[in-house]
Image (cartoon, rainbow, N blue to C red; front, side, top):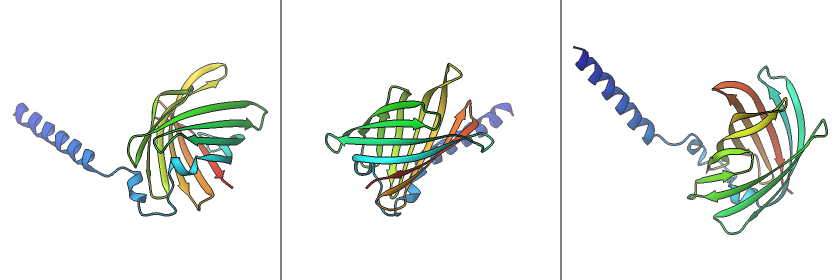
Length: 180
C-alpha cells in the first residue's frame, strides 16, 4: 500500500516537472508585443534613468538618477556602465558584462552581482533575475532581484523590480529609462 502511494506521488512529481520544463518562459508571452526591446539595441550608447526604491510596505525610501553608457563589441558581447546618484548624495557605479547565449537569452556579471544574472528578451520585454550584494547598515546583504523591463516606445523603457530576501518581499524598484 505504501509503495503504491509512493509510486503515484513520484509519477505525479515527475510528470509535473516535465510539463513545467516544456512550458514557455514567462517573458515569451510578450513575444508579439512591439516595439522590440533587446539589450543589444536599447543599451547601446547612452541613456538616462530615474528611479525610486520602496520598502516592503510600499513606502518610498530612496530616489536616484542613473547615467548609462553601453557598448557592444559585436552582437554577442556588451559592456554597460551605470552611474547612480541617490537623493542623499551617495554615488555608486556598476559595470555589467553582458553575453548573448542565443537570440532570446543572455547572461550578465558585475562586481556586486553574486554569480551570473540570467536574462531573456521577447517582444517589448526583457526579464532578468540575479542576486545583488548591497550594503545595509554597514553589512553586506544579498538580495534577489526579479527585473521586468517594458519598452513603451523606441526611447522609453519602464523597469519594475521585485526585491526578496529568503523568499520574503523586502522592496520594489521602479525605473524609467529614457534614450535620446
